[in-house]
Length: 208
Image (tube, rainbow, N blue to C red):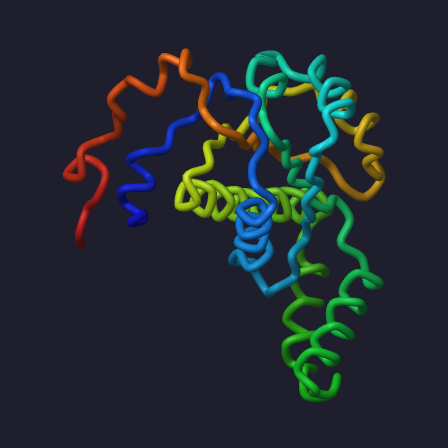
């Protein structure tokens, strides 16, 4: 599917049909998330993919609108870091060295840039930056899913404490930024029949 056709086709599904997504399609969608744009390549986030029906049932009380959760195929929690420490950065550079066959000395300027970011930003600013990075991944997941003819619904309306407890989140170092439900739209989800409404291009885009 052409990417513009895919964006016109997709909408935030209010009710899925309960059928499971083929594993090959799910793998492709998740790979798009892994390859997503990431500032400095630090990827201060990771994905938790919930596919076990029993676990999904435990998560239903966490959502103010549970219809998507109770009918979806998979649920992806985008978990952003709230504490980006020296150990995390050290591991990142070790990974670069192993993958590219370079030395730490060759990466010194890059390392200094990252150190400057960590030293000049407050904890709250770094937490906000990390959360924003996870939303870039969210966009990549949604776009990839649409091109695979997989429906989605991103959700921010949830009770964090329930999700964190069920998914065993390390509350001292990370938090759930946003959640994405995946599956196939139900036939009786009337929202699929609504015309997509967005700002017209002349109200949305300004050339300077």
